Length: 168
Image 1: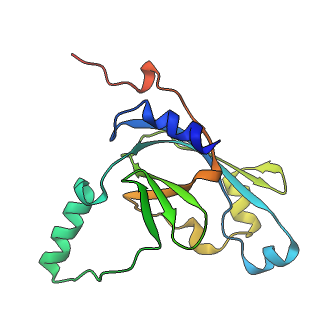
Image 2: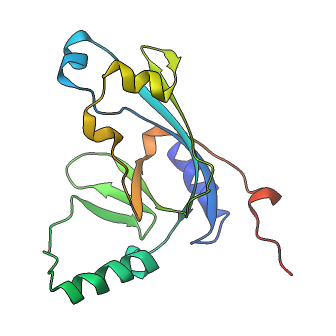
């Protein structure tokens, strides 16, 4: 999807609202799979929130409060990115890549993923049994936000009644 079309699609929505997005990724291959020349691609369609400030998220606030209770300190780090559009688009510091920052929504957001090995669609179970991906790929991750490379976005679905909140 073109960068300007992405900006246009998100400009039609208020920050913090949900949107349906479809994007592709290339999962990390194991060393033998790389050597054998396998190409694995994952296409995901999911519901996300956009334009959300990370430090204002309930999940993050609760985690930081728990860290304080446990006496844990978070180390400052130098980010690999800078904001191009605050809380929306990140620009990589050393590459021309741009990323759309999105927040995960609670369970039940109807994420659908399809996997392709060398262009042929396979199920998740088949891919696991093939052993092509690094084992850590299959561990469950509990993310508050994540970044999607702008070049990997296939589609941002238009707002429909199905995704709109009904006012009483």
